[in-house]
Image (tube, rainbow, N blue to C red; front, side, top):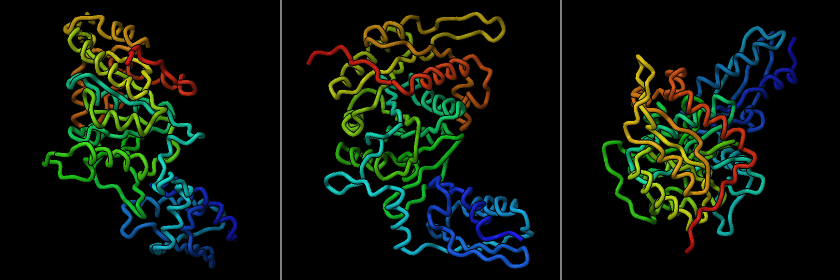
Length: 370
């Protein structure tokens, strides 16, 4: 016959799918009884109507059924009290806070292992968001824990490109990010009517970004990719102030006009102290599917020139591929929808380079005298 200790060991292998920690560690197991091979488990959910209740049910049933001597599993669900939820929130946050008592940004902690990458561009239309999504998924495929912060408050598009919808669960001022294709994501699009424009000015933008960084439980990420709005402005400045250790990836197209705009954006960002970790050239060429011939529709050399002027490296050039756009519109990133496509291969190569540099991704100061 199974013992209580054996069943508890099995339950310790079940993680809360939103918080990412064992349900035993979070004190979600309120009671456990074993009678004639039937195990009855009383589970306390962190919030009423937990959207992942069915998944928790399946995971517990599978884990406990595997214990020798268990013939059946019965699960009774309840909900934590306010005090119990507060204890879980305190445990997950670790009691951290800044001098004003506000929750601290975990990525600024001395022992944080997260590489924060701000994905920037000088202007819109260069494919910055689609590259962000595909890089994030490619990094997740390499085995890294990855998150995307959709910092483009006005023109948010990450949820659709990643194929994620819904409303994040929140309790005790702590928000759980949604997940799609192995990547955690938070966006203002989860909280607003998608048909209404966001008409916010500096202070509201700053506060929203602060909440995304401090109030969201990201867990132990290897990479956090921040999709910035085009150009420079309040959001880019606020992000640099809140994440002084962040690095920046600049996305451009080969044409000189786009390259010059991206250069100005990069140089302006230097005033905030952010470092450039590399340049990505998108739409570098169109590869004819029948002959394999490359056509430089938007010119060439813009990415390499930009990297040289910013004293950094060109991480890679992504060819034009309609499937890259189609995949983002359908919520299926190209690296998943068509992993053998040339553009997908280049994106995976960039992700692998970032992964290899993850322990020393420090970038270089931008050449700007103020």
